[in-house]
Length: 113
Image (cartoon, rainbow, N blue to C red):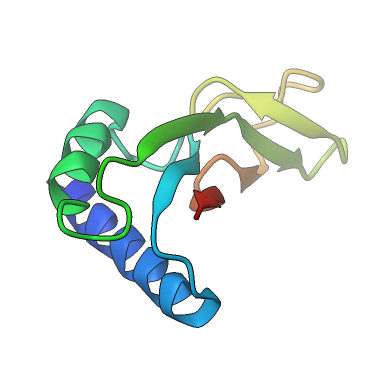
């Protein structure tokens, strides 16, 4: 389950920021997760609680904000939303799409003390 490794990386980032910025507790962690990121939100929630034990983020509330998938259509030049990775452009029907959003996982916000 790669979600545990992702949680370990999130913990490392939080602890580095705590040292650098001097906070001692995290009350809330907000994440942006793209629909094409391959991250299972439920597994991430479970892993988050387990991995954060003993850290400044222990008992922090996890918020997950799902980010839609977007792509740039090469023939028509429009940025479009995608429901599935290999969908056609809803404007012109082309399959020549460059995915531009929805593949990421990032920390959006930390509420700290």
